[in-house]
Length: 166
Length: 158
Image 1 (cartoon, rainbow over the protein chains, first blue to last red):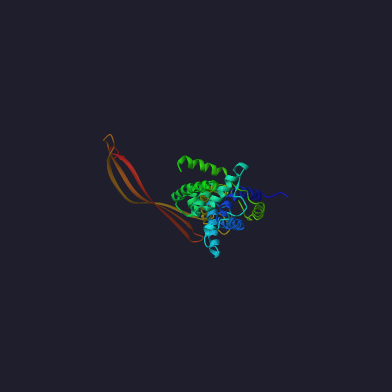
Image 2: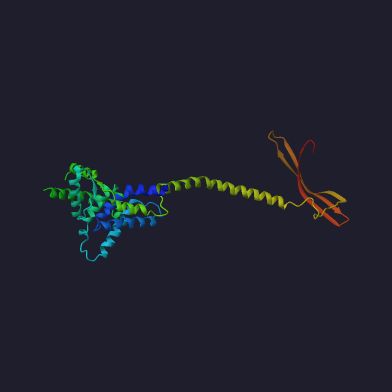
């Protein structure tokens, strides 16, 4: 059975962009299952809001973030959303070769220690490949604020990585 | 952390790639695409197709409307002309025709030509009248047309 072109486009789009979305969601959700649900629900919501067309990435990231916050608020047992990162989940956040495996583990652990406002900017900038203007749009902050959070966050991440090493 | 260290660390982070989707999650996403899914690219192409078509359609529509208006006007003009033949059209058998000219007024004026020669002009106001009579039906039609006649008259002739 020949698949329709739409199905092919859809799969290509998923392969290109969904890993970034899931990486972002993983840092905001308390479990892998929650992260996956956040991505799927955000995709569906954004399609509808965007007239059944592929939504722009800033809109998707913003929707994942909003849904993650709503989810955390609903869960009364979670006292502090900063501790909700699924860092103990066994799934790696990054695809790496053997030589980078240890480094990626350190980064994953260090990212979980960062304040969320820095973590989300770093994720969107480096792995979401977004500009500061797009990040600002996704998070509802000025581009300059996103840039300064990125710099502070990067310094902090490096310090944390060194601590893990020592 | 200086600028150099910052850049090196950022480059190291960029070498890490987000992990592939777990198989079961990828299957889940792939299995449920929205029915009306279309990429933004296709949508943009479609929008640009439309804008290209509109770029031509707009002036073409204006021209078409103008042509229709002209054709409609011409047809209306044809339809409003009195029928010259036809069973129902009354015909006039003019058995008497009179042509009359009546001088209503006349005056003279003098002007100088470029070479300085004086010229006299005679203005005459006429009323031309044509009378058609159909005695069998007792119809009389009179058409009057005012006319001004200007005649140069040299002083020698005058």
